[in-house]
Image (tube, rainbow, N blue to C red; front, side, top):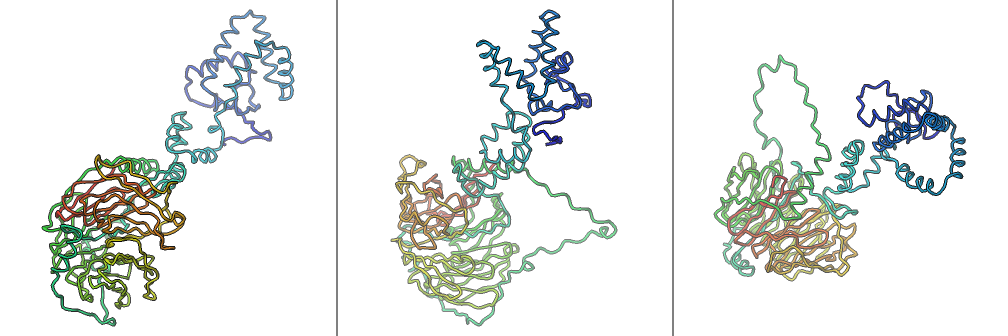
Length: 614
């Protein structure tokens, strides 16, 4: 509180109107006129300079409703004879100047003399008088703490109460707490969450996958069309340099201003901070677009054959195709920036970060590129057959091949090792926590590997079709709210579309456990507990095989051979939306806070934008 209290709790010196220059409104003028005629009245701020007032009589906490009531009292008093005016004024003055104990005694005596009409009047008049604006009275820290327990809608309603409440409702602390509770997670109180903030430093790797005329004929076509590849082996002792240092991709330094030596450097501008309320409102608009299925679509054309893999960030979109090329696009404008040629067969996998791009091809090689200049830095050879998937994390690169093996390339030591265990094509690999690896295969299994010992820790079995994609997450915000009957159907699907449902088999494994999500040609998406190996949930909805998927803490996106893209709710497993537009199987998908990017066998790339500007 801005004023010091004496030894009497709840007492405070009155506000001195003589020391202010604030003009008075009509209500304040009416109250001032009343106080001039009754200097001893408790509501008079000029009563006594040395006196103290309670919370109700603090001038800075005066309510607008007190003005008309005092004005009405003054008018009633003016209508009385002079003798009665003097008597009433003396009674008010005596009561106002009396100490607390005497006031109680006077009131007690008056109550004994009151008849029922007076008691009824007191009962009606006391109810509004006992109300107090506790938010304005309490210290700011306590008021902000109270506001932090409200939901967004209640905070907006509170802001309409008064200027004091609006100032507190707009405080950065309140909206910071709101953002912490909702962004990138589902709030346990209200049950909804907001998309994660865009961050240019976030690194994403997206699902490479394949497409053909039919799910079964696809395998035959690829296997029969594969020409014998000359075996190329690399000794494990051979050193290789990925050329991934920032100096290999940095732009040439700009020329210095010749006058800069004579001028002192300008101080950096102060950092611009956005209010947390603005951030919350922006994320809320994006969340509503996701929930209501509001988006814009952009189609990119440039590849001459099916798009097999893709990845994007806030500035670039990179795609690999069956036409042997890698194309780099501007994600905002859709402009084709560069085409990388070098592979002799289709590009099945790719991943990039701020420094480098690594691509894997069915020509059994991987290439490391400076994608900013288009230069191929190095070619890695070691697999005896086509490369289907790859994933790197810091200094470790994993690649899966048609020959059923997984190779681990260590950028720090330059050594290459081999993991053998799958009996068919390795369709996806994912490094987990730098020391573990997950892989899926056409042999319908998913394997969990220890990279230190190069042994298989667990085999996940449950799919009855070839497993084509997987993604791993250990984020603490991933949580599931299972329905009591363990199944539910999607309320959001196109008319005539088959129902999309989710069923849970081991709900006890859904808490405090990292998860793995996989998709297979059995038309299902499965969620697994990494700690126990149990299947937590199976999602049904696609009518043909699932080729690719991506997910974050709020939703799962899947692409399938039925030419559709489905958006699923992460917590419930329900299908929220079905996106149509591709004329061929959807082979790869990517997901960010505002976008879904898909590639298809129809040679097209589609960007589904759920952003604020939609």
